[in-house]
Image 1 (cartoon, rainbow, N blue to C red):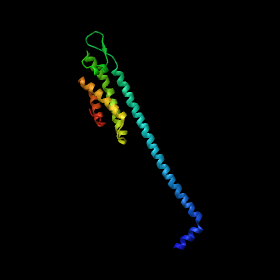
Image 2 (image 1 turned 90 degrees about the horizontal axis):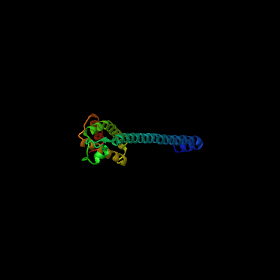
Image 3 (image 1 turned 90 degrees about the vertical axis):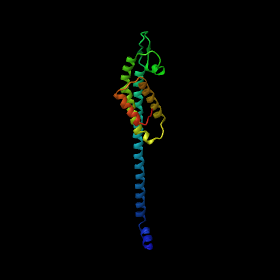
Image 4 (image 1 turned 135 degrees about the vertical axis):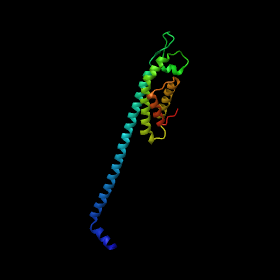
Length: 172
């Protein structure tokens, strides 16, 4: 058997080299294909991450616009305060009716913000242990939620927002 193998190899060396070359080429193609698939997954992951962060930032801009809109105070002296100022100083003069109206405009925007945080948590945070951007947005969500709670405001979008925060492991 040994003699047969040596004779076969010596008489068919080009066939053997060709077979080895084909096997090496197939192995190389297989590795390159796996690398390409991994790069495609990583690229779609990066695109998903950037679009999610973009949506969250746009939600924050919308929330901030409502937050910075002046609200006339009750005492009639023409003083206007924003929700930001009322959050900092809850003892200042305020117009509860105008605050409730502003919070009703803010509530759906806040629910959308929390929904996007939940999506980011499900899609991106599953592959990470810690993300400072997500943590910062979570702290902002809790700050906004406290404003709603301080004003004893409750509606359906706010309830959905709380569910999204709970689902995203953002505790308050």
